[in-house]
Image (cartoon, rainbow, N blue to C red):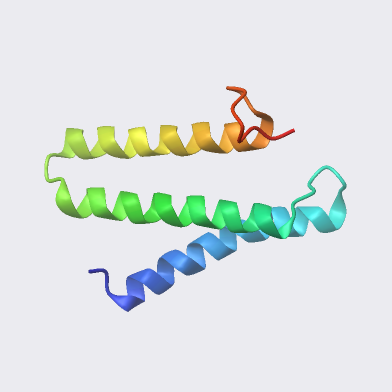
Length: 95
């Protein structure tokens, strides 16, 4: 189990990353996120940080650790792209 300090740090990191689109929404119409968009991205970012923490803790061999983290990042980016613009045309596809 992750100590509460690390959990708090990861949550703070996710929330600070979500400030980027929130601030951008104040200056341009190009960023138009709803509350649901923020919730989904918070879930994705939090899941990514937790998965990376598990890999860093459990996998001892450096090359395997790097490979697994790279795979996690790739999966995250593909899900993000699908939700944003629908590169695969699934039911999750964005505009």
